[in-house]
Length: 67
View (cartoon, rainbow, N blue to C red):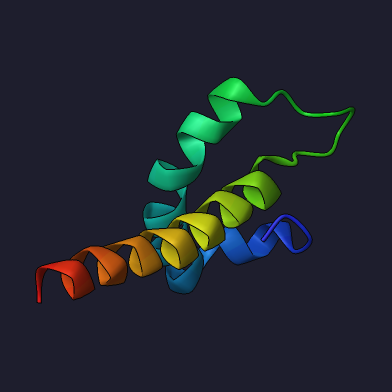
């Protein structure tokens, strides 16, 4: 959305902002921008990927031990 600034003013832009900003806000508080580049979305995607991959496999292993 930063590549096309007018996209934030559309209904889709408002919808995506309302979904993404609560997740990105903690990362933006911790990780400062490097120059004019904000790398917090990249870090947030990595965290989401690792949490979904390892979280689900850990949950599966825990359930497999119970059953």
